[in-house]
Amino acid sequence: MPDTPEATGTASRVDVTDAAADMLRHLATTHGQLMFHQSGGCCDGSSPMCYPVGMFRVGASDIRIGTLQVEGIYPVDVYMSRSQFEYWKYTHLTIDLVDGRGSGFSIEAPEGKRFLIRSRMLDEAELEAFGLATHGGAAG
Image 1: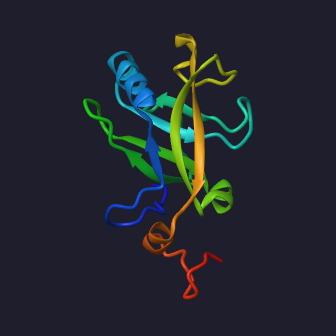
Image 2: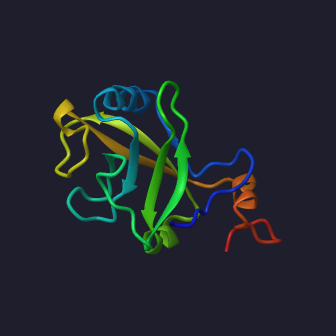
């Protein structure tokens, strides 16, 4: 089972926009429980790839970076490779939905939409919650 770099409490590494949540609810009616794997650059750049649970095999080199709580469907786990996470560990990711068809294997492609990652640096409270803050207040 992949380990989880999640904080306890209210801090989260991942979130979802209303548009992406609507698409996840739509996809869940057809495909059942869903999950994301944040691609590391193959196929569709670095897009979040959405799969029905069980369609994508999470391996020992993958970690769960968070779980999306979308009203009306099962929680959606979000995974990333451990090596990629080392580059992104100071970043909060928001999964959004935009027009256009990605070139990957993500299940929203036939809908004429694609999931997209929007990112920002973690704030001081989040850095503290994830154990990434230094005593001087800056991440190192």
